Image (cartoon, rainbow, N blue to C red; front, top):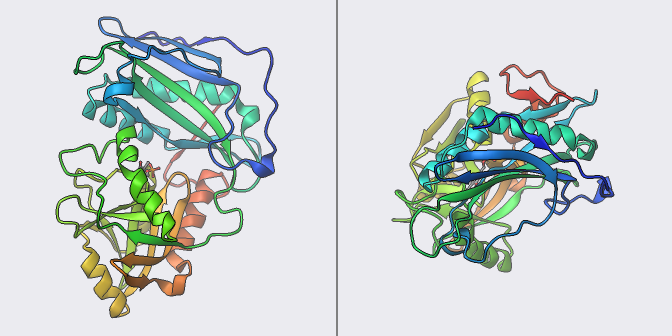
Length: 357
Ligand SMILES: *Cc1c(COP(=O)(O)O)cnc(C)c1O
């Protein structure tokens, strides 16, 4: 693979959005990264070009058979104007795990991190500075061979786009109400649950919409076979503090291996808080809520970092957690991770990676 990235800068820079009204994923920066794959030639022609529409054949295989994988991570601007990425190597490792599952050819992980750094550096003026804001980085790969036969595509595009995003909790952290989904399932073992792929999201939209209609903001997914054991919350991993011990579903093949999840497990261990990865049933949590030992619950993911759960609705049995307020440990985890990400707290684990000018 060529390691030199060609750069074609745009002349007419776009106006930047109002930093107080960023929202999530609505604005895109001046440039994007592209690289092509052709069978026989491998990944080639890495380039940074003006952000804009792509031209694809309607027969491109991604439209028909769904070979598409993605990642999500963030760049933060520190008080002294340094730019930090949070564990980007973990995301690129996971992108190759997703690639492998969907028969997409692997990409050199160090090279992908390099591509992210170059692109972020070129568009660094777009990184917002207000508390809680960041630049969301979306790397993704999709099949572009113009062919309707069913097999793995022989052509792909790897693209990276950047989006300045607002503070997730503009009005302070508020616990969410969650519906435990007992009709639809997100993934099954042997399927694609552990891969970050578009198809998993397509499968989740209807349950999410129905939860919203009933006044819940997210879905808690149960295992796809017996609908007994907890998997994830929406697009987040999930943790429960029960009787002083933190529980999270073990990575069993149908759960995504979140970078935030992994970081939280490391932090808890470093604080000597007992944390166990195992099968966790919804029945067990319901029992714990009845006997008063269910102390805290929270989802974890790049977008929100920590999303406290205030209430679970399981077939009309309501489980209220910590009076619907954020727990002490959830708050401490949130403050520590966001502190490390934004450069306000010491990074003892070596998680942040600086983007040079
Ligand atoms: C991305 C994602 C997560 C969270 O992963 P992070 O690396 O922590 O952002 C959890 N579950 C699903 C299904 C996801 O797609």
